[in-house]
View 1 (cartoon, rainbow, N blue to C red):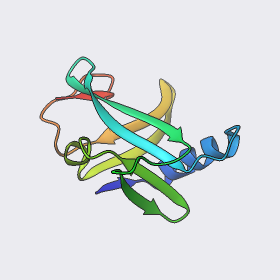
View 2: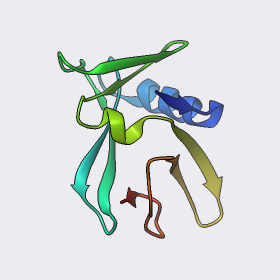
View 3: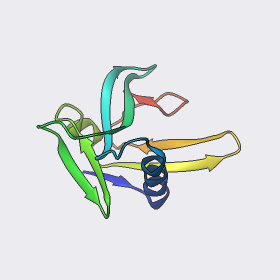
View 4: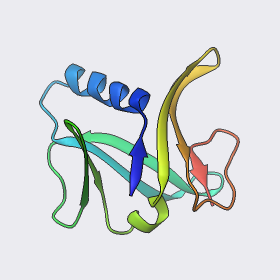
Length: 106
């Protein structure tokens, strides 16, 4: 379904280690909005929703809601550290276009 690079996995593990409570995993979803039509949303959650797909990578769990699943299928998520800033990047084969910030697609 999706791929998290080693760098992305390390970033998620770091966020989990710093969280006040122990999250169950990372929720990734797509919402209408952004400058290209859809925007990526990510966050740590205490538990998955009942209809979420669960992607397990070693000790990490990623939760994806049913609406977002087809829009995220085949996406590679990376975490990049650069002079311009650090953050997650998305290589989404389902995107026909994307904005310059890389946080939304159409």
